[in-house]
Every structure is written in C-alpha cells, then in structure tokens.
Image (cartoon, rainbow, N blue to C red; front, side):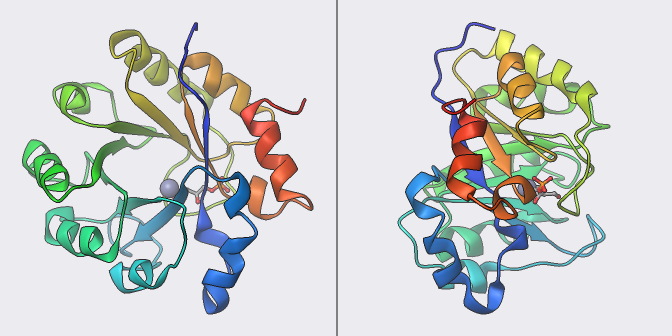
Length: 215
Ligand code: DX5
Ligand code: ZN
C-alpha cells in the first residue's frame, strides 16, 4: 500500500499506574503522538476501567484519544469532551444512533472516531465513514490488553484505505514489532499499543520500532 500518511504512535494507558498517573505518563510524552485511553463499562465489555473524572485529572500536553467501550455512548460523550478528550471513538455495536452520536462528538469540538470489533463487518460503518475523522479497527476482542493479534482484520483496513485514502485508520490490539508492519502495509497509520510499549525495558525504542524508525 502506497500511503503518504505519517505514522502515529498511541500508547494505550490501560496498564498504567493509576495511583500515580500523571507522573507515570511523563516518561512516555517525548515519543507519543496520542495517549489512548481505554474506557470500559463492565457491560459492553467484561472489564471496568475509568470514566471522565480520571480523564479530567490527566495533565499532559499529549492529545487524549478516548476509546469508549461502553453501551449508550451518547449519554457520556459530552462528559468526555468536557473532561478534555481530543478524540472520542465510539463502537458501532454499542451506538443506537451512530450518525447522530458522531455529529455530537464533532459539535463538541472533538475528533470523531468509530470502531468495530473483530467480528463486525465494515458494512456496519460504511455509511458513516465519510463523516468521521478516524476509524479504529479492533485487532483483538475488546476488554483486555495483552491478547494476540487477529490478522483477519487486516482485510478491513485494506478496504477502508482503498476507499478512503485520506482517513486516519487506527488499529488496536496485539500491536508489536511483528504485527505493526502488517498493519502499516494494510493501510493503518495510527498504531495503538499497550503492553508492547508499557512493558518494554526501553519504551521509546519500542515505540520507534513500531514507527519503523528502528529495525
Ligand atoms: C483492548 C483495548 C486496547 C488494549 C491494547 O480492549 O482497547 O487498547 O489496551 O493493549 P495491547 O496492545 O496490549 O493489546
Ligand atoms: Zn483501545
């Protein structure tokens, strides 16, 4: 895939130290384009994480990319926007009014993203792709970090890149130095990575390796 879009690295902070979050995030700032904030409601996914109050408490110059793995996202979009989200991504499976929810995110001044699970077809979002700022393709079943990459989702990335050459395409789940090149080759330009970066001895080197700067 011949793509001119710059690769962005978005460390998922799911595995961060939440008792000391702002201090913890500082060591990732110099090489992160976005911080990916995983919001889980114990309902859409079988895990619970954080809400807008924690997002509001994050003090960083890095844009916060909030991935809402929650049902009824329309009820919380405004709270995340007010808490300082740069981008808000909602799941097609969880939203009952996808175009309206996307419009609301944009009206609140945030970048709007739509995400689909590994088992969801791109047909579920084809209609809204012209209106979003980014699409987030899940390459694991959402809920937990540290799972194995599902390569079959790459066909969805390829389809979207072919039809929307300028769209930001993020991929999330199981991204490491072996899977990142496959995702980039398929057309993804935003790499969300949790355990590979957070558990690395040298997180900056791990991030640059994903970006392709270090082989
Ligand atoms: C999974 C989350 C991911 C996760 C990625 O539900 O959406 O963002 O934190 O973690 P790794 O990179 O470890 O798969
Ligand atoms: Zn995520």
